[in-house]
Length: 221
Image 1 (cartoon, helix red, strand yellow):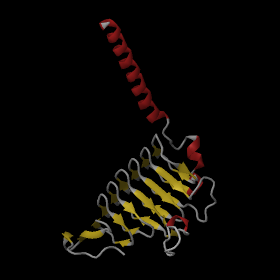
Image 2 (image 1 turned 60 degrees about the horizontal axis):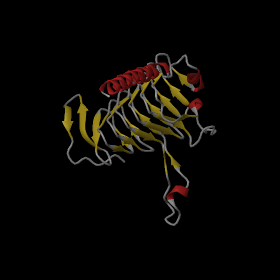
Image 3 (image 1 turned 45 degrees about the horizontal axis):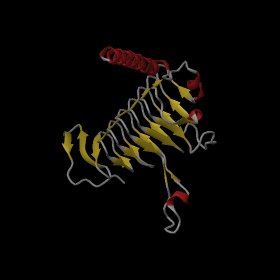
Image 4 (image 1 turned 90 degrees about the vertical axis):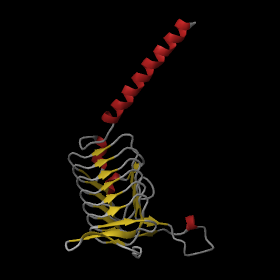
């Protein structure tokens, strides 16, 4: 009985190790790089860029531009439009610059214009979209009302912490830190830190003072 259990345990360990090795291998072999056929579907897919495996939802790549040296993490949803095959009114709908890092499980969902500048990095589970539901008619279910598009831009060298949300119309400046869990709307100036819901400027930088805390700042509009 003991020898049977030992054999079963040994076989289970061998199978588990084989499975782990296969899973590790799949992360390398199934990632999408510039030379892969799937990369050719994109409007651009720059040299040295990588879309990690497993991918999240991915469609209408012809309206998505990926720069050079960019890494898009596993389980990232990257889409243009509401459904595969949709004809878009702008091109590219989503532009991701050079040397960008998009964290695991994030969503970049474009409909009109999302522009992510060079050297932007995000933590995991960040959500960026340029479309939201309308709710003007109080008698109509919100899901049936016509959505509203407003372009989004994220400036060069910015950092978005885990679970940050970037809403339609957000214009984030250069070298901005968006704190984890912040919800950003409206305009955010260069060289600052924003935090909260809605995001408020909590620190600013200037050549005269360096970094200073900002007390009772108004929310970005």
